[in-house]
Length: 326
Image 1: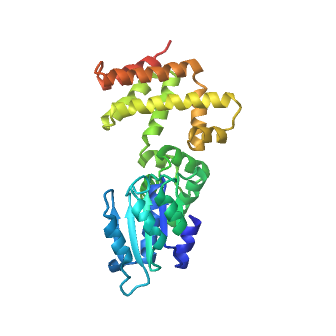
Image 2: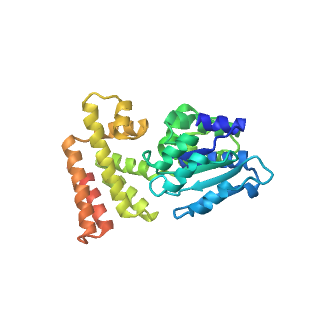
Image 3: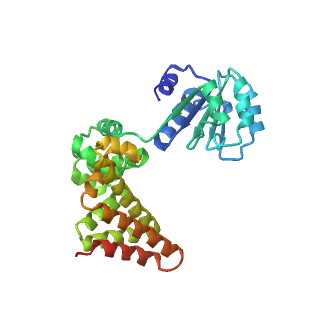
């Protein structure tokens, strides 16, 4: 990202850029910055294409057209799928891009073995933007609060991220809500977060599993009914429950091997704080209990899909079984 930021700041651009990865908020932000820096409001020298099935000949014709009273012609191509398959013709063209033409590709899924990936790498710069770490998110979020003269402690920031999640677009919306809610105060509190922020489903599943672990059946079912009332599909809830049991089983196994939280997070492919939460929750279950719960989740999924039981009732029965005392 540093190279991309430096090019935008200096105005010295390469002929091709690929912005890819999971973090949509930053991808969109950098795309806007690139368009503003290269084309500004000049639509005469800006061509935009989106989706699969783009006419490559039209793109090449546009790229070969000299800019009209401007230094550069910018061609933006989004979510084309060309970095997975079908980009051979445009990849060949990347070897002879006119000096006045700049390509900007914005994609989520790319194959680093594809001809397009290699072609853009040779012609310009590839910026892969993955999910940000909790530390990076905290620094960015603190900046948003500070811009509105709001303060937030480190522990409260961790609470916000743990409850809202690591999606920067979602975090940005929730931060705006918090700033508006606390308009007459300088400090954001945990109570503010509880009052106005929407917990992501993963966090609510965490809460449900917590209730199951202490055999609090009422809280378990109340959490489930709340999700159903908010139109959350039972099958998605079941998937998340099964996923959580699986993560806890992994965390328990890796922890038993003496691995640190950071190592466990890397092995599981999740953020540090999620790994920590799974490690803590797994202590409330034996390995055998987690394996049985995971197997039962899979069995419930199969029964629902085969028509053996109603999906809402099936998930409810699973929750009743694992939250009952004795």
